[in-house]
Image (tube, rainbow, N blue to C red; front, top):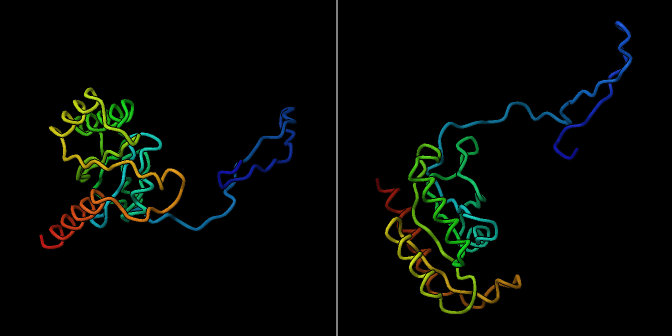
Length: 184
């Protein structure tokens, strides 16, 4: 089963010819009631992948914060209210970011969540074609967009010798936002 439960066979009960055994699901362990929260945390930043392989995990490793995955932050898990949507600069990545922003506009996100911006990570070490640049301009009209270049070392799982200046700028934006939040 692999989901923290196990199946136990209950002995057959001979009531009216019912000689079948029924599975009974019992928790494999019990840590007591889970601590739950009703609102998102005001601490930290959450990285939301607009699609699989967007780079949210890498950004959380390089800049800190919470890798939320490809979903909205969960208040029950005390995940950050401040989020960045992450996507690649290929057509499907930009479409996924657009869908996420559309869902935000429609209010399909948890109460209290605040979009800090969009991070677009280069999908290849070449210049973007005009149609993709046009889509990025459209995204910029909706939310702040931060573009990160292709980083070859990350592709093979190595740490880059030098982080690109765009990543430093993004870290500064995050730090400035956190500082402004503390003062208010």
